Length: 174
Image (tube, rainbow, N blue to C red):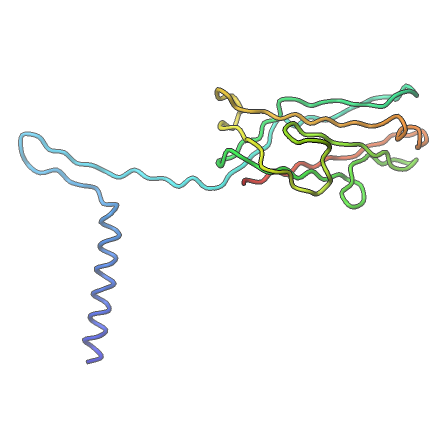
């Protein structure tokens, strides 16, 4: 009785395997004046994302008046889902945006196209449209821009010296 049960369970497994593999089996043609065969072609597109064309912001020497503001355009975010979320982090304490140097820290703000207002460090944005081609060169592919702004008041707070910081942009598929 036990052997018969094992045999029937084994037969069920073999039959199930046969059914699943037959679903993807090529079809062979018959002999005749014409013959037709077919083959299944399949692929799996996994979750992939890439950000390119990110540019540095080099403000140079401060004149003593006003602040700095600059925009980097044509940043390409490509994703197999055609959408993404963005999280920006700064290099100061608690991922704050800013530059640091011998005279302290100079905070700055970061804006991203498609997002209302300034970004909050470490906080993911809502869903944004990503490009359909990795080079952002397909018809209608969106590109993004990032603006970094340093106020005059922030510049007045620090002493002479060289200041630098980093904005890290993390994109994730949605």
